[in-house]
Image (cartoon, rainbow, N blue to C red):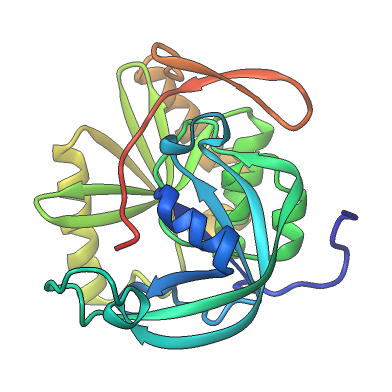
Length: 275
């Protein structure tokens, strides 16, 4: 398949987690996939769905390899989708039943180098076709993109939109960097979004939760990212990494990237459910 070169829009591709061989069989043989309505992504509906396969798929695990074009989306309960399934508390849950034209394989798989857990990723077809690894599929804001490009230039392996849980609360980190003696959360704040009193309280609560879990939090506002990347942001990141012993490579696994290079990255595996 040729690389996608036409202008593309965020959200036209939904990268969905696939952790159930039975659900994958439905996709391959019946041509549809289900998305719980109450957890559907903000960018909806997608034009394509791509699938991130978890460890149950063994040789094809921890990568996006397959995608399909959306032809129709219906609304249905779980009972309607699985009439032979015994009734339970999930039987009345509503889903989007997404029908796919056919399942295609990417020219090259998009690996998760840390073998991480993901939630839905809203991305573009251009990003899907050109991504070298899973973090290249993200891109929620120009500020995040600027920091991501700088981290890549510095060869700092970071995870984007990394989920962290504390006492039932989930926090999505803009960038997570894993060091030998700790972890760093790098946040990019819009110039006005985090200036309100309520946001300040939420940020304080969030920072305290992450600190209690061993995270060092670095926050950079818009002007710092745009005007002081080299003079302020980069030195702060590097100084914090050095204080924490540098990048962690103590539990590495081997992953072959699309360019044939074998890279070593830390192994992180978690479970998630489509139900």
